[in-house]
Length: 515
View 1 (cartoon, rainbow, N blue to C red):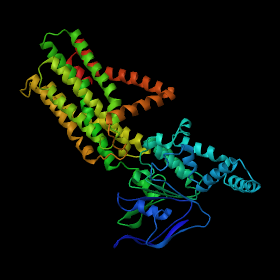
View 2: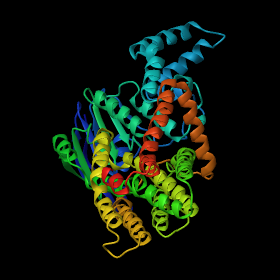
View 3: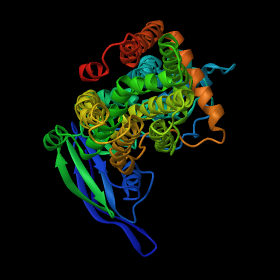
View 4: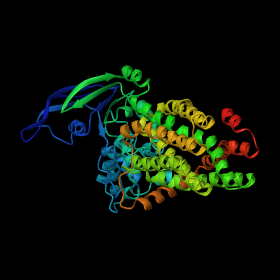
C-alpha cells in the first residue's frame, strides 16, 4: 500500500498540491489521467521519493519495494541493455557488482570469503541466479530481441529505449509499480503486449499509471482518477469505462466518415470514369484495343507509384506533426485531380490527371489507415475498421446515384455529355472533401516519433530496419507479398471491368446499372 498524508508542494508562493490525502492498495491497477501540465508526473515523483514535498508525508507499507519508470532516456547510455534492466532492483545489481570485485581480487582473504558468502546468501534469496533469465524474458515480451540484449543502450533508438526502461521498472516483481506515460513511443501491438503484461502483474501488486490518454488505461485500470490543477478526484471505475467504450466515439465516427467520402471516388473509377475515357478516346479515333491498353497502363502506373511512395511517405508520416499534413496534401491533390478530370477534352491529359488523382487517393488511404492507432484502442480497431468499410459502401451510393442520374439523363436536363461529366466529377470531389473535414478538424497525432533533423534519411533508415525485421520473419514477408498480388488482382478487376465491357460493346446503361 502507498498513501499520502496532507502532502503539499509549493513553488514560491504557489501551491501545486495542497493537503493531498489519498490511498492506493495492493492488488489494484490505478489510472491517473489529466491534461499535459496537470501535475501527474510531479505527483508520481513525490510518491517515488524523487521529489520531496513541502509538507506532509508519503507512507509505504514496511518491507514493500517500489519501482518507477525512468524518464531520462540517456541515463544508461554507457551500460549494456541487460544490465540496465537488472538495475531495476538496485540492491541485486549492487550485490552482483560487489561479487565481481571480490572474485577478481588477487589477494582474496578469509575476510573476503566471509563477505562473499554473505553476499551469495543474499543473492540467492533475491533469486539472483535467475536475474539474467528474468530480464531477458521481460525484454523479449516487450519486443526486444535476444541479439539486442548485450548492446549498449546508446546504440538503441528512442522506442527501443522506452521498452528497456519499462522492463527495468517491471524487473524483480516490485510490490508497488509507478509508471509515468509508459506507452509513449510504443506502436499498437506493443501497447497490447504492455497492457497484457500489466494486467497480469496488477493482480498481485499495486500499479499506478499516469497518462493523458484514457484509452491507454481504460482496459487495465480498476479505477481511474482525474487530476486537474493539482487536485485529485475519483473519475470512474472500470465497469463504467467498459460501457463507455462499447459505443462508437465521436472521433471514431469522424474517421468512418472519411471512408464514406473516399469510397465515392472508388465507385467513380470503376464505373463512370472508364466510360468517359472511352468517349474521349473514341472522339480521338483511338481503337477499342488501344483504349483498353491505355487504361490498363494508367491503372498499373498508379499502382506502381503507390507501391513505391506508400512505404516511404508512410514511414515519414510517423514523425511528429507529419501525418495530418501528408494526409491533407494527398487528399487535396486527389480531389483537385478529380475535379479537373471533368474539364479536359484530351484523352491523354485525362489519363495523366487520372494517374495523379488515383495515386493521391491511394496515398491518402495509407495515412488514413495509420490514423486508426490514434483514433481508437487496439481492441476496437477491427470493429471500427469494419464499420468504416460497411458505411463506406453504403454512403458512397448517395453521390453515385446522383452521378448516374446526370450521366444517364443528361439530355433530359438539356446538358451535353461533357457538362454532365464535369458535374459528376465535381459532385464526387465535393462529397469526398466535405466528409473529410470532420476528421481533419478532430484528428490529433498521439503516437509519433520525435522530430529529426534529416527526415528523409531517418525515414529510409526505418524502412531499411522494417525490411531487416521482415527477413527474420519469412512467413510474414511471404504473406505480404501474396497479399500484394492478391489485392492488386482484386483492384485490377474493379478498375478494368467496366473498361472491358465498354470495349466489348456492351450497353453503357446496362454496365452502369449492373455496377
